[in-house]
Image (cartoon, rainbow, N blue to C red; front, side, top):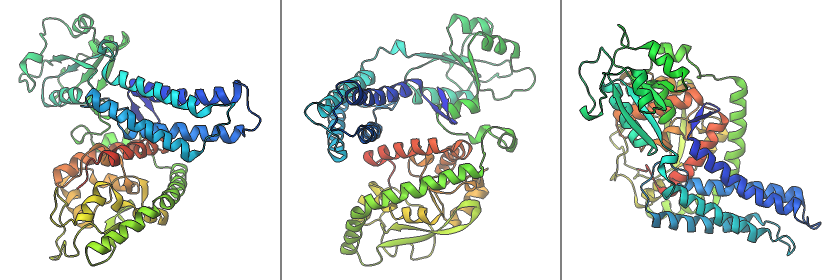
Length: 456
């Protein structure tokens, strides 16, 4: 993992993104600047168009899941997505109107670069020998925390080899499978050397009373083995801050959770610019959606509802109406559930495609919301969740967002348990939020919308 602006990236994913960007930009730069430059071409404008094209292709690839570390696609499905990516990229090139006088041949060269890029994506997705990317991890502990770490390693990264669990002297009962518990006839240092371990995750139920061999862990670290705490592991691997591994002290004295005026000003400027552009682009879609809502059921096109925002202040969120007008006729708030009978036919489609969220862009311009942030909840649920889930109020230290880290990482929540799971992602965002992370989330939102994940 590589940490950039407070966010962890898998080394392989980062290399793939850089390769794609440099391949497209490199081809264009070579043709524009080094291979018989054409005087009829405005080089500065062409370079700007080339950069837009490169980032557009990156968004397409992200949306189609080419940078996912874990997937269950067949080779045929990956080929189909590669063809779709190619078609969308050609359409994007036509929209951008890349310069292509006969002497330049920019568009054919770009098509060749995209073909090479997609062939590389298919190869890396299905055919790369796994031994080149393997990472061997040992979990120090055999209790419930260690079991959670082992499960996260198995589901989050197919390139990880779980060497096993090393029991602490104070852990007599094992929560993990017996086959995974290593023999303690050898010292931790010897086992790490024999098993060629790359990383040790310390996941102990109890750390007091000499449960940790500090000298051996230090020796491992001095030999180049990564030694990480369970909280750092989940933050790095899953992008979440676990509720069972944090305390008020760690939030106060730990890194992150910094909200300066410069960061707030940059985020606000980014919100205004992006929301304005998105509103202009989405106006035709919003117009058609409004007409369809009116044709299907009587009532208002828009739906306004009180939500809790920054520092606990209330505001009204605006969405396209996707439910019947009598959805809560008894006045009792309810969670939206899968196949909710209150949702109209048009509402089901606009929820699936996230079109119902588009009017919130105007709320972003008004300043009550941001493009990226925790999902704003209703006062009724905020009061309930604040009492039942520790640190729930921490998420209100930043503006709520149209999309967010929890929204792209976890399915739609419809219970207190789901809210607790999503809070762990929200805490990660509150701790590490930056313009860079916001851009990453917006990229991932494209994939969530295209794949229709998490809608209710």
